[in-house]
Image (cartoon, rainbow, N blue to C red; front, side):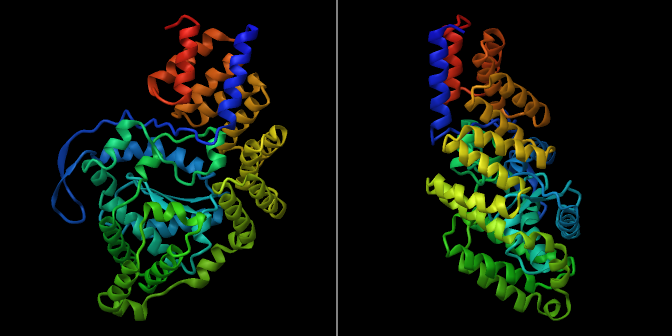
Length: 445
């Protein structure tokens, strides 16, 4: 690479690794929107649906792995995963769509959140699990998310134009994003758009169904009241760790009062006879509750990052790492925070530590690649992005960073091919501009 090109490349490297406002890029723009009518499995009424059931499942399979990785992957506590999955399958079998390929994932993310993809993939974070008090409350939470799947709420949003315009415009909002996620360049690929906020009517319907499903599964409906009470109290606190949950699941005191009324009227008999299973819940979440201080420190760090105070965030993340040295999310958040602070060697060290403690989870591979870019070790960066693409394909950002790594190491022709491939998927934003400029300068356009 000649000297002037080397200077331009380094200038762009410094620009996109220090900026605080990365555009989130979507890979969902290619979704086929086939218009047609379908019977709503809950109401029995004909509705305009832009997605068939097979499309719901396919879109789920394409996007949910990226969101699960963005949420720091599935926890490595096999007992906890199996327990949550067992409760989930018990409740889902009582839904209006029991044959959907439901899967339940307990996620390493410390923030308070749960979500459902349209094909039945349901994620529950460590943060929200710590705030539950019984298995009945967990069943209520899962019932609510299964209600969104059963009612086909994602398809409804697409059909009404609330999501289709987002997908087709190529804009996505990633759940749980903060300053560290932006600087890390991980980006979003449409998963956030699929998890965009539900309407209040959809939330009411999911509440009603969640209560119905957990009661059908022979749980005490008081668990649903407990869940609604917890969410109602949380909604007034305006905590950063809960922001994503309430942006996608709008809460109101009316929802809590409705739950109280329904339990006292429709489910009064079950309230007196069915179990809560508090002790069983406590037994199965014991390991998680032992590291509650670690989760709290991560939440405080995320709050500082959201307030653009990375030095304060680093102190909180350090507390988490000291308390639980092999916590995957804690090490990755330390890596991202150090990227923001331009502590390049430290960022790389924590990214490699995260890879070591959870080698099957791909986000650490991507973050490691980004830290190698900061250190201008382009061959190592390329190796990481190649590995990431094999492990979790489908993120356009990976293609760009492969090209950028190749450019940095002076390999113009393969870099041009990657930039061309990237522009076939994404046409706007800083990365697209850089790719287009290089292809022009190199005579390919």
